[in-house]
Length: 168
Image (cartoon, rainbow, N blue to C red; front, side, top):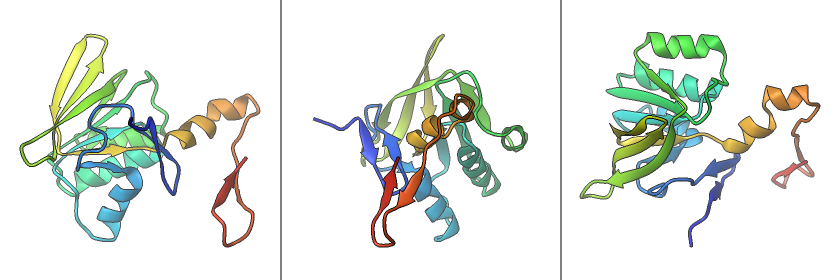
């Protein structure tokens, strides 16, 4: 059996499509590590999942570093990032697809991601991608402004400096 989510150091990442464990499917934190620490892009054709501020910031960085194509998709119809981030991304040539869901990723003969199948209300969109970047799901769900308005918020605290974060 395969997991539905992947637990990582910074949060929970969705494993909601076939091919989520192929080489070329990375987390947002891994993308930032490639870009900031190693000074390289992990691919040429990017597909980012989610519309948080961090995702749009990363997608804009990919565009500024001469990525061939950058798409940002989200299952909802509303963008969750600040308008400045989305405007900067679109102005630099990025494409944002709302109400789209990643269905599966197909590998090439070597085993890396080659195609992404994206479901939308009109049918299926097939994109040539070599890197799929996943965003943390618990951060945007539990710390969303809609949750704040309802009086709900999410805390992470340390019990001691030697232990990992404890969720409340």
